Length: 426
Image 1 (cartoon, rainbow, N blue to C red):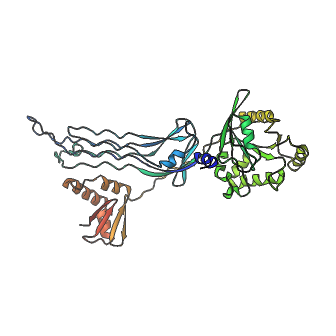
Image 2 (cartoon, rainbow, N blue to C red):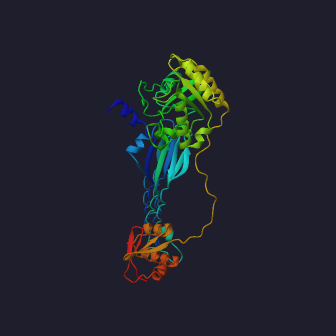
Image 3 (tube, rainbow, N blue to C red):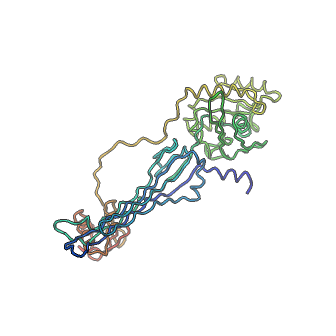
């Protein structure tokens, strides 16, 4: 593997993971049997709760690389209950470290934006522990012969997108000198070469100017069509959404066959097509390579075409004009407002009356769906006669049996609830 491809593979800003909470422990079926203790009664304890899965933002991580290698995260299950009214231990929670700036999506909707160190998000709930037979004791049933299985943990698929946290974004066409400027302003050492697309992934650097700390992000070169996936820069355009100021770097002599003015218009159009919000950020034109012959004349022509733009002529190689650029960044950052959270606002609470279940006929069997009825089936121990009777009574009270009959179910027809399948007997 070449050095370029290896460097690029180390920075991953997108990952899909599966998180699953631990299942609850099974309840215990037990009776107290001790010498000289008549009428001991049921003493089966409840199972422990399954562990939860959390995401935690940490400054120690810079990429989502390790999450692509290991995309499945399962919390520990709860322990089963025991006799003598002993409850099972709860399953250990699972903490997954993610880089600061990670946006979490579920079903295509952003649910969290983890930007501060230590910020956490619960993404998968552990199942509750099953009840032991001691919990089912009543004055009518003093010796219950049933217990519950633990509730399965919640499973969810998540999409993670990393958006770098930086103050200033360096954008522009390939070979504009962004990496050279970053290496001069900060201690970062990005790859620099005299050919396009030298930068294969975003680079971060911290500049210290008179006690003012500024974080710069160097984004791979943009070309026409970048918003639609052309070139390399389109993969990282999301990172400049985080920045508060944009430094649009341009070679004073242009890029390829295009002059500087045309290059500026192309990049501005790509930003506008990708996200109109980007064009609302404070942006200046940083005209590079002013140390070359003819640069002053080219700059004068450029200023005539962009009379409203603010120019900073510099030479990233010699350092000419760099102090003025840093002074401007410090001044703007002192008054610029931090970016607002990009999490979509929650919808107002609405009370919607829905049935606890739905019955559908497919081919030669019936399928009953619904969170409540599926949880009941998953936690019922069908090897216990009392548990089976309780399961049937609850289905009858919920109206499932009546709905099956209404849909044409006949004795002996197959009925499926979650992973449980049985024959319909009214």
